[in-house]
Length: 369
Image 1 (cartoon, rainbow, N blue to C red):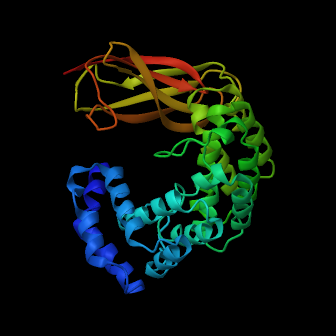
Image 2 (cartoon, rainbow, N blue to C red):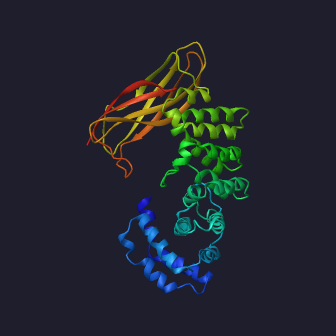
Image 3 (cartoon, rainbow, N blue to C red):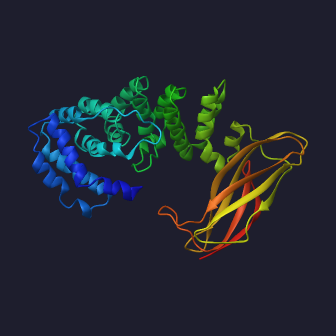
C-alpha cells in the first residue's frame, strides 16, 4: 500500500490541489505553487513527498494563519460518506492536515475548525496529536464536546486521535503513563451507534492494555455488565491482544477459564513446505472433562528469524463451547509468502494450538528455501 500511496502524491495531485485552492482564492499563486511542489517530488519517499507538498503549500498560502485556514476550508470538497475501508482518494487531504499540525499550534480555534472539517473528508487523527501535547486541557475539552457530534467521523477522531500507539504516529507518552483522560472519552463512546467508532474505541483500549493490562481488564469487566451485543463485541475486540498473549484475567472476562481435560489432535499438517507456500492445518479439539467449557482457540506458529531463533506469531482461530466429551475440528491457513512487512526464513516451524492460553503441540513443518 505504501508504494501505491507514494505514487498517489505526484505532479497530477499537485495540479489538482492547486486548482482547488485557486478556485477558493483567485489570488493563490497557482503556477508558482505547482513549480515548487512538483519539483524533485519523484526523489522522495511517501511521507517526505507529503511534507514537501505541505511545505510548498505553507509558502503559497497567506502568511496570516487564520486567513490561510479559511482558504483551505473554502477549497475542501464534499464530506465523505465512506467509513470502513475508505478510498485512497481521501489521502488528497493529508498535506492539509500536516499544514495544520505544523503551523497552527499558536492558533487553537482556527485549527480546531480545520480539523473538524478535515476529519470528515480524510482524518485528523495525526494532526490532532500535537494539540493534545501542547494544549492538553483545551484539546481534551474539545474532544469531549465532539463525542456528541452528529458526524461519526468527528466522533471517531476522539477515539482514534487519542490512541497512545496509533500506527504511523508518534506515541502519546503522557497518556501512556496515565490513560485516565483517554478512558473518560472512551466511556462516552462505548455505546456509539456507529461500528466505525466502536471499532476505534476497541483499538484504543487494546493499545492501553499493552501498557496497563490490569486496567484494561478492569474496564472490560465493568463494560461487560449488562452489555449489549454491540458492546460485548467491542470488549472482545479490545481484549484480542491480551487473549493472544494468553493472559488469564483477560480470558476470564470472556468466560474462558483455565482449560481442564482439553486435548488437541492434528488431523492435517504437511511435514514439508517451501517459502511462498500456504500451509493448511486442521486440528480437533476435544473436551475430556465432565464440564462444559468455553474455549478460545488460537494457533501459534513459531517462525524462524534471520538469527536462527524462532519467534511465535499467534493467529485467531475460533471460540468454541464444548460439552463433556464433545469435539470439534478447526482449521487455519498460514502463508509463507514473502511480504514487505514480513520476511520468512527456511527451517523448522513449530505449530501449536493455544486453548485459553495453554499451548498444545501440533507438529513441525520443515520449510525449505
